[in-house]
Length: 83
Length: 92
Image 1: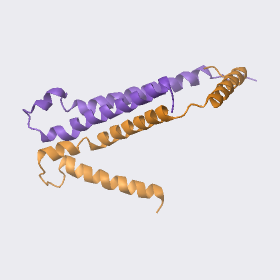
Image 2 (image 1 turned 180 degrees about the vertical axis):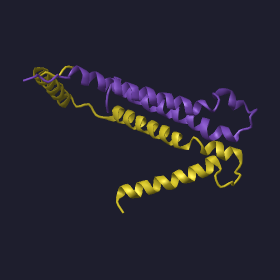
Image 3 (image 1 turned 90 degrees about the vertical axis):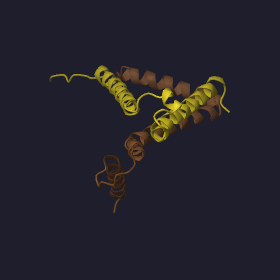
Image 4 (image 1 turned 45 degrees about the vertical axis):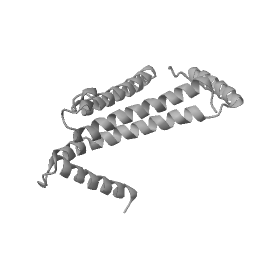
């Protein structure tokens, strides 16, 4: 078995993704079948956000990847010498 | 039929089914709850897949056995590679 920090980080990732999956599943699949005065609705944002928030996360992720790629390419760009 | 064509065909089929249910193109007049569940389905599947990938990575990180000798050897090789690349001019 891996030790110490590895186990903590790994299990943390598993728990985080499990909770994210459960919350998102309830948000998308369970809530539409609940009456609008059910108490469960109190714990969830309006449904539009269930589409907007992952969209923003995807854009941020792509921005980070693009910025990293651009930075590395830019730092290694050698202008051609004129002969 | 190539694999690509098979995948595209399957994706087109599922996409059509999703559009039919979400936007009520054939006027089936499904209950509102079903339409509300169907509409974010593509995004939901993407998020689920992302969560699954994250969980798989996390689980493997937690259960991978430590290999002291291999770890040292890998660190050494990383150091050598960085040195070599730096000599050839790559800046990180």
